Image (spheres, one colour):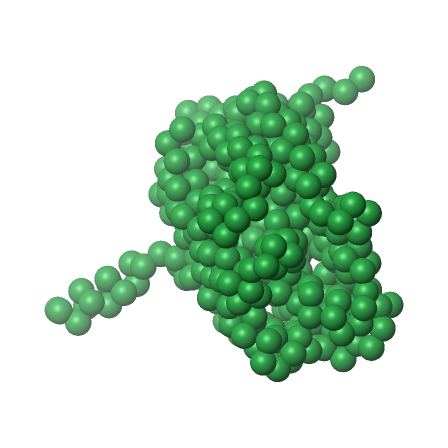
Length: 425
């Protein structure tokens, strides 16, 4: 009898929590790939003599192809599920990183890191993991996504110092090779053995499923609205889609300007590379706190208010760095900006689901995140170019402060309610 109860308790663990755990681990190592560029920035310049603008242009190309890969991965995920999307993406990503370890010229860096690795980043990305998790939960959706996405925060916190040490002791080539090999093994094992795209694949309902209410129900999460889920084309006819796209373009601009140039900026002011690496690691750790706050708060008060507050805080942080360039001010900037880093990640999937339904959440979220990464790549490049032209990052931070204020107002004007299909003439 006791054995039967234990078996029932074991079986009672909802499979969605295995999805959350796998997403956590995948994002943990994916964070090492995404944030390694800032660590390798100056060592590669020292080896090859490239300018910051040239190296930042490679990152821009990487973000552009990454953005394109998000749309492709989102569409394939909606149609085929996550398993093979993650596997194929991981092969591209790992191959790109491992080939980068052997480059001897700038054009090779453009091809292997800027194109090949970038095309693989969409599969094991934050946006896709959020979209996968969102389909497994109706109740506690924000919390579940936040827990999954904390893997990215902890991965950055744990791996950036490790990558910094490996780079300082053994060189950036060993770091790129190590990252590629580890992701290849971990991602494919979890994708094949654990990842499933929809509760229906296992004959289950989303966690907290309330059933069909009066007036009908949309697939996975639109219960009680009587409205059909909107696809990307219909979503693009709404003002809220373009307001949020503006917000996410600016969000990516700030994210990747700081992630790419924080270590070069800090070391320019006489701070050691190890201290700067720790700063970038804490930058990632604080994003964990932001994630843990964002998900539950969105379950209680909605999405747009936390997003708006995020950009108001960023506005003041950019002003802080413009006024003070000390060890203390850099730490405050890194910690508080890190807190805002991933707040929009769980809120993108939940907001798009709330506005348009969850049937096409992979594609819509992928499109929005594409805009985010195009903004990130472009502004990271402009940061390097501005430095080459002016000798400092001051102008880049002034413009970033203005854009953060624009994102704050754009967030306020989003209409956070279920959208209908807009009739077109």
